[in-house]
Length: 409
Image 1 (cartoon, rainbow, N blue to C red):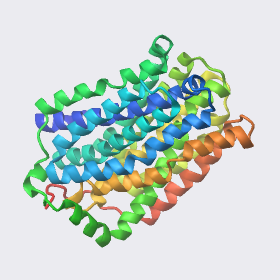
Image 2: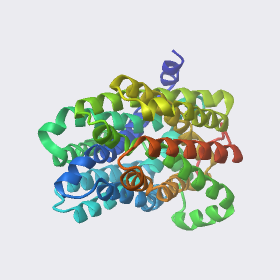
Image 3: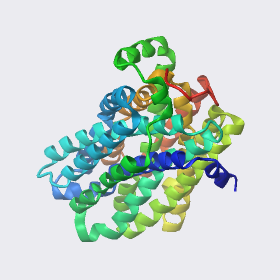
Image 4: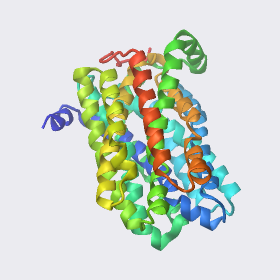
């Protein structure tokens, strides 16, 4: 009931804004995760190894900082709303172009372009949301907003389980172009950030960004390292997992869909719970607890053999992983300089993503070359290392829970 109370206190404009930002992130994640479900099929189509196709995941992640920087500057200079619309159209177009790639080389290029567009969405959407929403309940909305990512994964799992056998991997990417329709909703129902309108950010936003990064270099560097740990945590437990279920267990698409759906229900619940809890116990403490609780789940998550136990393991693992992530939108925006909030948190986020972008390629090659096709040891050690790193980096930083985000001047 407390969750419903948070929504009741919002104005219609605030509800529409949050819905648009949530859907933008969900559909962005949906487009990204379509690739992770289709890795095996694409490898078969282009007659190559899984690790070669996994390079497409790498380039997507590696180019996201470019998008965070470019779209972030655009958001700080021209406004959050128009930038979000341009970004959604861009990632939808590049998703569609991936469906028609005639070779792996061309496919990698389209995924790099998609990565640029994907990199811009999180920072712009989060800034628009938190500059519009009230400070009360920020932790709850942070958790729910971040778990648009889990909802995107759920959508990709559902489409894979129901449509893949009919449309193939190329058809999956055609379906991935549908998010462009969201722009109509934003155009008609969403207002510009009142904080941005009040601040009317300087036309020299890129200069201000450079000054703020230098002024807050310690904070910026810590956020980059933190986001390296966080992205290794999420992508290390998600990107190779459908392939582990498909190749390691020889599960049909319907069983893969079931397990990933259950896992992402756990992700959604964990993000909202820990995000809300962070209002009471603090951002850092909530993150540390969630990250460390992922470690005891490893045996059930990586070494189970039945659909039921793997689904339970997936539920618990993603409950903890996305529980920690649920705190991040509020935490990063609270720590960011107000005048460049459209750029600073998203750029730090995506630079961390760049540092962790070869994670899935390394995992795939370890499975192929060192562990002779065995996925569990690679998945298990990934969680041990990155969960510990998330906890340590988070504990060494600071927080500004509840800071005023009503203007950008």
